[in-house]
Length: 249
Image (tube, rainbow, N blue to C red; front, side):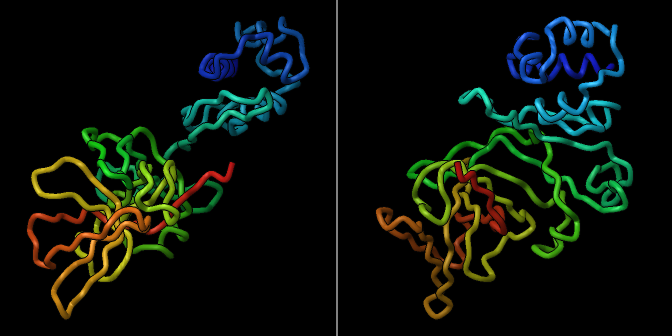
């Protein structure tokens, strides 16, 4: 794919006309048309293009890696587009065939899958039908190791829905889940489901060893807590929440 084709790919994904892109980078519409048609291969406004489209320069110039539009870009005219970027895999480790790690400029990064499923924090849970990730988020490998000893293939990013965990977790928050943790060895936020149910929820689990009960708590006081036996086979723990990400406006 040529530079012009990459520009056209981004422009169409953002529903921008050639004239709108030209206006954003300070050139005439004909300049964008010549670039996309391949008549220009080294535009002098390459920096302005990368900044306006909000994409990495290496991807725009050389096609290194992949980009995916990660959210709608409607709203104010000056709203910057948001992309998820996946660099080309250079060094792979972990299980055979898995693209878990890569190196970029001498630093190690990990790819963590982002799933379409939401972990419900409201009165009803959402289904997790898809097993294929939408894309991968990039995390520094040493940063992840400070959170967990699990490998990236045991981690997942999910989105929170509902208000039962307000305000610890808010609707739309993204959470990083360690799926290798299948037991409540200490109090915290966990992804749970009930046996024979495809729906998942995020709740605070509190151990009561003296009574052998597990308190399933919503941080929103409008939702009453529930209890379960620590040995209850009907309750399945799908992972522990180890980090969250939130938009602040």
